[in-house]
Amino acid sequence: MRGKEFYHYVFPDFTEGTVKKKSGEIVKTLLNYNTITEEMIFQQAGTFRAFDNAERIDTVYIQNKKFVPAGMIFYEVATCTPVALFIRHQTEIVSPGNNTGFGTTQTAAISNLNSLHRSGDAYQLKLPDDFKLTSRTEYLLKKNGNYNYINVKNFKQVETVFSEKAALIKDYVKTNKLSFNKSEDVIKLILYCN
Image (cartoon, rainbow, N blue to C red):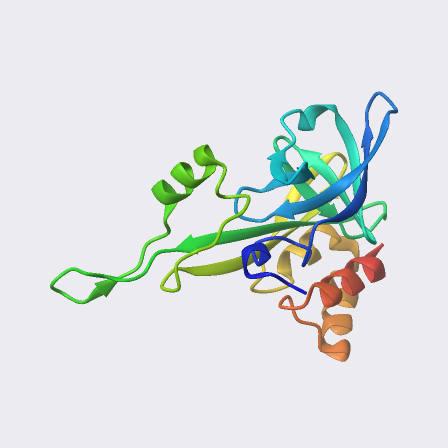
């Protein structure tokens, strides 16, 4: 069951996962990925905590997904191919509209997030009904050790990374009616390109 407090996590509930450290140590614990703070969270004795040593982590496995650290955030490894696809899961808090006298405005609640983060509430976050969460997925291709962001509006950047296959990519996207709105379509395309 997806509890209301977990709708800003990748998985519906905390589940046993495996953390492989660069030292070779393996740790099994209850894990989930917080898409607001972009932190790998573990549950211990009823509290939620973020790993504060992401640079010491090699890989995190949760259910059938694999995550790797990129600085202090984690990317999901979507393909294990020569030019690999990574997914960045994000959620933005949008505050309720404020009446400005000229209409209503909505803003991303960055200051609210900072205070939630300091208090630890971002891990157990329960928003008032008038706040909204907006999910955003970014795709990255890793080629020659460098990450390249892919614009979710079209497949042009994929054609640039795989320039020798640009015409084939156009045909494949059209024939298979692929959409960047579906992660499985993006994965399918990158597998095809490799």
